Image: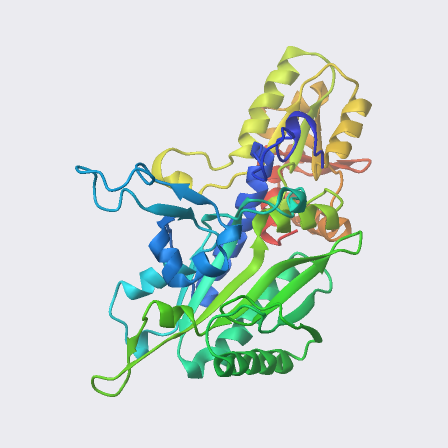
Length: 457
């Protein structure tokens, strides 16, 4: 997949750790988000939206101002350095901070309502952008940014629910990494750091819980002493890139401190008795940008069809105006097979389809399509337009795909089913094959793409 020029995933213009994404790159991140969102109902998560900027007082309450301030962006409000001027609104002279993480906001959401032991666990998910003031020398492509999006989540639960929640989160991680066929990932337990909040006893209990969950998972893990967050121990999931460098993606963190700092509580089964929930921080892929970079490397730039911004391209043969015009029409039909206005558009399928109407030879167009990473290419010439519009065909070929054999099998099964369906129809409606290409109508091509995408290929 090209990473330069007008079709690049992100802008090459230098930015301070905050990339500009082209439409193709935006499509990839949105597909990744959509995949994760589709799993949330199965794991009991509800998505929320939270602010980007909070007052300094919130960060002091959470402990971030004392323990994480150097990694935060401070924002100066109007009049912050001019003293308390008469006529200014209350709080206008305060300092603010761009959020580096979502946990304080999620604590406020939990705090906003009266909670019962029957309500727990409560699970929030959040894709809001985060800002961290990384050193300029630490910035690296998409893997280390100052502004990024994370599939952040927080679970508020009872003590007796901790093990089940951690176990389910580890299963969630395994499902996602298995879907993306990323191979073996590492598990690492981070223990109490030099600077921490809370008591040693609380930390020991939290670390014991995480060790038990890892032991029960049956997976091998190692221990990184002193690598816990300042508020609690954590399990990090790491992927290794082609250069042998480990990148942290998913994380599971057990926190006894933030609920105490925010005075979170829920009603127990005993009359007038309150208890404090336990907070579990979790991210399944971590930074979406970093995960995308690792996917691009793992798949050599050729992403699976269901999330690729280059799913199909129509290549025209010759310079006839009617062929070019028909190619543009077919491209729109393939891209939006269920196009309709209003609320019905929410249910519509959408594919990433382009059209090459240039004057280059067909051979050159095919080479370009393969180089850019299109999963499928479809050839259209005058011969394809001999039938009436509804019966006109495209000669479709599998170009390149990380799971080429699996996709080829889907195409063969689809072809066989279409042949069986067309046996009782006229010869004009039958499937034809030419060399490695398969002649399909627009509708059949839409059905084929739907079939490939539905299998997460």
